[in-house]
Every structure is written in C-alpha cells, then in structure tokens.
Length: 119
Image (cartoon, rainbow, N blue to C red; front, side, top):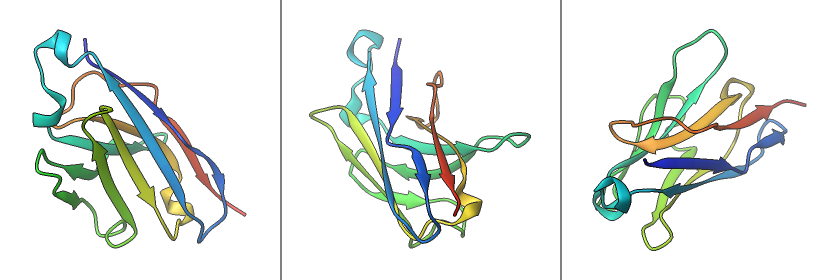
C-alpha cells in the first residue's frame, strides 16, 4: 500500500514562505515506480472539497492549478528519496488549509500537514 507522510506545516505570517515535504513509501510493493508516477499536492479547508494545487509529472514538469497559486507555489521532486516538495511564497490567509500530497490521480490519503497563514 502506498503511503504519504506530509510535514513542514505550521503558522506563518502573511507574505511569508514555507516549504512542505512529503515522503512516500510502498511504491515498489504496490507494483508502482515512483519515478514514473505523476505526483501532486492538494489542500482542503473545513467544509470544502479537497482541491488540486500543483502537479509534477515524471519528467519533472510542474503545473499549477488555480490562479491563486500561480507564480507563488513551486513543486519539485526527489526520485531517489521518493519525496515531493511544495515551496510556497508570498503566503496569504486564503492559503490556510491542510495540505496533502499524493499521486495523480490520487490513491489513499495521508494525514496531511496544517498550514495557517495569520498575523
């Protein structure tokens, strides 16, 4: 079973930066190859559906989803370590959410990491 452990969240002031990390495991046992799999970051606020934020394909090409994060968020990956990162700059209160990483399309969800943007 593929699993994801997200970390790096916390409290940050508006305009600040934060880098989230995701460590994946279980790919090989599940018959998948991390380096050949598109990976993604999602976020969710209470009462709303989880939304796709960023996607990175197996060729390291990243793509943002949603006008609100374009130019501010960057997704990267480390295939050797089976990790995915989300660099978030110029954070806004509207970015407050629980952030999750996953494959794309997604498999089972991890616990996520809470990001709170506030004074």
